[in-house]
Amino acid sequence: NGGNDEACCPLAYVNRSAVTCNGIFEYCPPADFYVATNPMINGNPACMTCRDTPEQCFSMTMDL
Image (cartoon, rainbow, N blue to C red; front, top):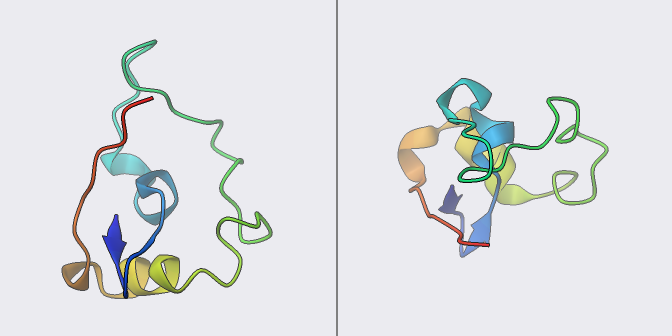
């Protein structure tokens, strides 16, 4: 999910139930990977915005 001046936040953190884990085609980290102490999440303005007001965000796809 993007938003908040080009910051981004993993959908698995914002709304885990919206993530489809499909083996090698769609990677999902363990459920306890995205916690508030994770440096990618901690202090990330997009994570706060997208979790509190998801209508201000948009989805993106990242291919690995």
